[in-house]
Image (cartoon, rainbow, N blue to C red; front, side, top):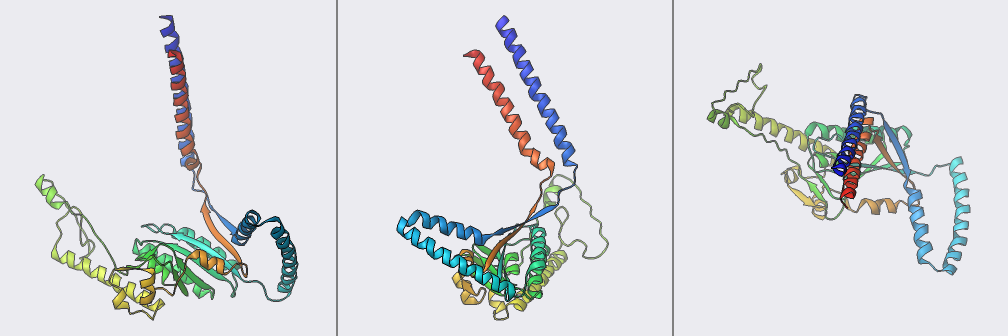
Length: 344
């Protein structure tokens, strides 16, 4: 009995401790969740330095000592020459730069907010001889979101800076709406390109509601305020207007693509189909078959290459979210571990 009493007392204390920790952490997270989201932070990383480090490391591993000594002497000469060229460039023409921006789009295209900040930052420092490479991956999404993203890319061209876009996996629908803005559009051989079409779908549960004697009322002001509805009974007139709206968006989509790539037979490619990179090149959807990695390497070391990224700062609630779950899990595991020791 004394053993059970002591064990019960220990277990009660342990559970009380865990509950107290959870309550405190929940209170902290609740307070933090009311904080305003933090501002983002711009990160600029030298890809030139990264590539140099990779090259030097690979040579140190693969070359024998004699070859390394010879390479070291050559590197010293090259460094002196680079310093001399650097002084000349400071006095005269500057070395051009390649700025690399990544865009991986989702259905709602919320990433456009980050893209906006990154493009603004680059345009503040870029000069006419510089270039911007956007590594783009997206299967498309909402029209207004990707329309804004395409407009952000258009800012680069309007500033007179060369824009190259590289697609390693997919640029379809809204993704191609962005990609076609490029001065030069690159694609990996097996990337999916195209899908110049418009899709909309909506479920309707009106028959199910009627079956269960549930009435649904919807009042609008304006003939086409609501064409199709989820709960109400859809009409042929509403369907016709809905289809007309889709056709109108598709027409504007085609006009946009044609304005950016006038070599295209727009009616041939605006069928909603997608093509692999090599086929897309034959159709004029892309300019060249090349991965983003190959393109970056082709400019090294002739150019200074920088990756530009805008990272949103996490709120205290987001930072603590993972910490709370981890702390609770560890506390429970400790209690279970000690309780097992009682029975061993």
